[in-house]
Amino acid sequence: MKPIEIAKDIYWLGVIDWNIRDFHGYSTYQGTTYNSFLIMDEKITLIDAVKKEFADELIASISELVDPKKIDYVISNHTEMDHSGGLPRVMHRIGEDKPLYCSKMGHKNLSRHFSQKWNYQPVENGGKLSLGKRTLTFLETRMLHWPDSMFTYVKEDKILFSSDAFGQHYAGIERFDDEIGEAIMPHARKYFANILLPYSPLILKLVDKVTEMGLAIDMICPDHGIIWREDPSKIINAYVEWSTQKPKRKAVVIYDTMWHSTEIMAEAIVEALGQEGINARPMHLRSCHRSDIITEVLDAGAVIVGSPTINNGLFPTVSDFLTYMKGLKPKNKVAAAFGSYGWSGESVKLINKELEQMKFDIIDPGVKIQYVPDDKGLNACHELGKIIARALP
Ligand code: FEO
Image (cartoon, rainbow, N blue to C red; front, side):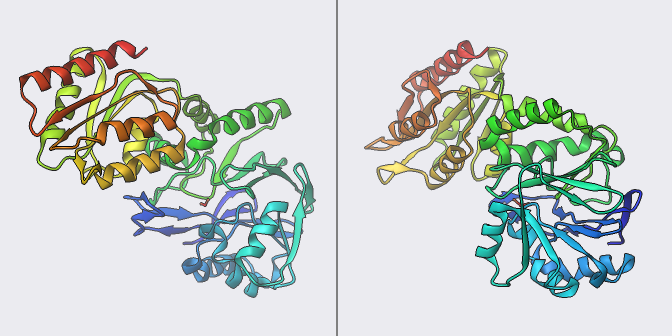
């Protein structure tokens, strides 16, 4: 891609990964971008690299503006390989001895990823670096979402380079929020739900801290997706709302099924929830990707999980989903389990055990039905839906 000037002498140099569809288990139906930035000041500074296979594309973009050897400083806001994978090639081209600024944890983590003895310059939280006309300020953002993560702020231009935070996995021709409008928000929301959700309490603290510091922000430049320039407060406010995890009158019924019995139960529960005025939908685990289900779980007040019993255990996709959801630590949910069985019937007990570990409020022991739901079984599913509806705000 050709460089795009996003502010005077500051350029977007990202690459577009149109074809990626699986980002470590997250479905990226519309690809993603890896954003890199170049500040042409007295000290020419590159902020973040790209994934390994796009390193040559980044070097070509830099070369449209300046001989890469003229770059004075490199900033690495985050070690994960989608941003650092291209560093060896880029540093080789820029000069292995050029100062590489990163957080202290970034120094440790980059050293664990790469054998090169780069000229690491670990920075403190609040540390500053003069580029000439501008001064960069580094803000540690540990666990948002790695221990090494940091932001880089340019006071003179009021630009926040926010690494992964405020990003979206979206590949498109648009570079800015005002070019795409509301259509970017589902991507930002999915990205939050699947990457940043476990760190919600830290996000709320960070927003408070930034507000206290009175940091003026005209533009937020994340490392994925579009740049927020028209209204950066929109994504900050969305992060506050998503981090708060206030439950809505919404239920997600997540299940898998072998011979449709658990499916019939899921649909009966959804029907009852709908009759009670709850926004409810069934999500079949082999029809919906786990990352899309979690996006729906984000603001749901109720999570109801169903599995048939197979070989005394859970259906594998249900185990997969419960493991994924547990790691993302959603909060403020009422929950229940259901499932069909043939002879042993452990699934409801096993789901409840997982839901308990997630600290969900299990409001009913759950419904288990042998073989195929009859009228009595369907009534039990309807009753479960009504119990859940009553528990929602
Ligand atoms: Fe985009 Fe945590 O890497």
